[in-house]
Length: 237
Image (cartoon, rainbow, N blue to C red; front, side):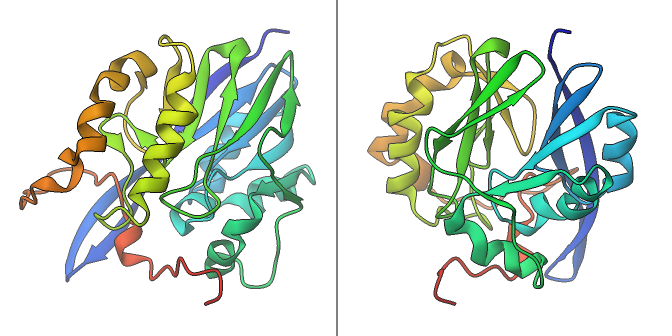
């Protein structure tokens, strides 16, 4: 059976400085009619499992340990006793949400997950978080980038870049080496391709991402709710 990609969009209301905003998150499901892998299950396990249906969940893979992307991980995995995978450097972030559990698998660079007739290759892409990863699926011409790279460029954490040099190194050295037609499927927003974003890389490196700070009027769902999550990025915290 041929593998395919499905997206589940979940919403949550967050409070920022006394104002409430809706935040949308993408959860990705990869598989066929029999089995699937779920990437970054956010908030609403019932909605995600409704999309999965009767198919077996083989694994839940978290590209980051950020709270708004692992919130449904345990419940989604528990239904079929699936394993949960996370990079070990993001375990402190995981514990901000799941204080009494640990992921089952410590992901490493160049690790491989298989589902249906395709495989997902683990690519370390730190920056937004120390253990951020992306998952490249050559068979489906797609890369699941979490918060590392989104349709509007490098992802942020609370409106800032925690480690921009590392993030740009990850993007330029790993993600932008993929074929230009590769679909970029992130935690937030719509999809783009490597070819859409790669021409902007030199501008990012030259400082365009941080050169000008402007106040924006927020309308509709936010693309980054991490600002209000109280996350600590220092593994020693």
